Image (cartoon, rainbow, N blue to C red; front, side, top):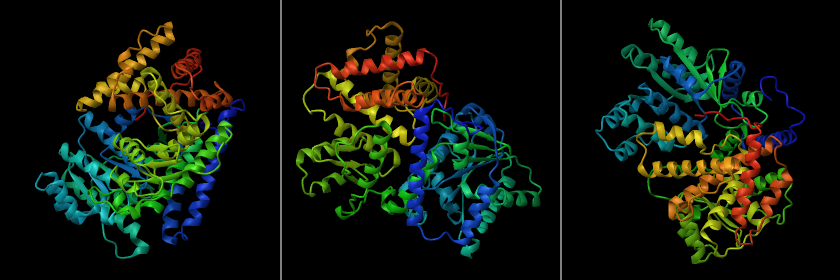
Length: 565
C-alpha cells in the first residue's frame, strides 16, 4: 500500500490477506465493545486529543542505526507504551540496549513506579536490598494492573549498568483530572532531574496517550521554560493503528521505524490486531499471579480452558485463507498455564494419562506449547496472540495430515519437525505478519554485537548460522555436502532449538512467497495434507520446498526485509 494507500490489483493473495486482517480487526472491535462499559468522558477526551494531534508520516522510513543516531541526539527521549502489549515493552528493552552499546547511559524514568518509592528504588539500584526485598516493599505488581515482569527486566538492566531510575507515577486527587495531574507530576520530576543532572540524558517510558502535544510534552515544555532549562525532546511513538495501514507494504509488512513530520518517530512493533488482542486478553486474563515473579501459583481451580474459542476462530480463518477444508469443525480443548508445575494438576482432569502428562511437562520445560492429537487437547504457556495463532496452525496441520506417531530415522525426524514448525510459523504470520525469524543477517549481527550472551545461546546461534550456510550452498551448487550428520544427531534442547529455528526460517519464506503470489495457496494446502508415510518423504519435501523458494529468491523477486530492531 505504502504512502498512497493503494494495492496492486495483481497481488491477489495480499488483497485477500488484507481482507482477512480487517475481518479479524472488526470482530475484535465488536468483542471489545461488548466487553467494556462506556468509556469515561475524561478518558475519551484524552484519547481523542492523542489521535487528533498525532503527527503525519513523512513517507520516510529509518534503519535501526539511523534510529540510534536520532536517539543519541536527544536530551529527553519519550518512548510510548501500550501497557498490555508485551512487544511494546520488548521494544523499550531493545532501544535501551542499543543506547548502552553505543556508550549512552541515560537515566530511566518509568510511569510504572510511583515517585514516593524513589528512596527504595535508589537503595535497590545501589545493591542495598535484594530483588525480593525490593519487590516485597514496593509491591508494584499489586497496584500496577499490567504485566510487571517486563518492567522488572528493565530495572534489572538498569541495575546491571548503574543507570539511575526515576519513578514518575503519583496519587491523584480527582479521577476526572487524573491523567492531567499525572502529566504535571511527571513533568516536574523530569525537570527536577534535568536541572540537577544536565549532563545525563533521560529515557522516559510512559503510556502512549500521554505523548500527545497537549499532554505530557506540553506540561514538560512549560516546566522547562519556567526554569530556563534547555533540552532537546524527542518523542518515539509506538504502534499507531492508522499509520500501520497507511504504511503497509504489498508483502504484508509495515516499515518498522517511521519518521514523522514533527521531527518525532514511530516504531511499528505490532499490528493493530495484535495490539487490540493484547488488550482483550488483559481484560480477560489479567489476574495478578499470571505476571508475578513469586513462585506461588493458584490451585487447579484456576486452570483455565477458555482458549478453545480463540484457537478455533484462528484455525478457521487460517484454513479459509489457505482454502483448506476442515475435516473437523469442533474447536480443540485448550488450557493455559503459568508454569510446567500446572501440568501436575491437569493429571486430575478426566481422560489424561501418565504418558500425556509426561509429554506436556516435557514440552513446557523446553518453553514449547503442547498438543495431543488423539485427545484434541492443547496446553499453552500463556494466552498470547502468537501462541494462539501457532496452536491454531498446528491443530490444522495435525488434523489435515494425520501423521502417524511411529519411529523414524534421525534425518526424517529432524525434517518432520522442521516442516511442522514451518507450517505453524506460516499460519501465525498470516495472523501477525510482523513476527520475526532468526535469519542470517540477524545471526551475524547477534554474534558480532552480543558479547555478553551466554555460551549456550552462542552455540545455538553458530549452529543455526552454519546450517543456513549449508542451505545457501545447496541452492547455489545443488550439493548436500554442507548438511552434516551432526545436525541430525543433536539431542535435547539443541535438537529442539535448531529444528524450531530452521522451521521458522522456512515458514517466513513460505509466507513471503505466498503474499507475493510466488506460490499458490493450493500448493501450500498440499503441504498441510502430506502424511509422510514413506521413509525419506520429510527430507524430500523439505528440499523440494527449498528449491522452489530458492528459485523465487534467485529471480530477484523477493523484497529484502532489511535490518530490524
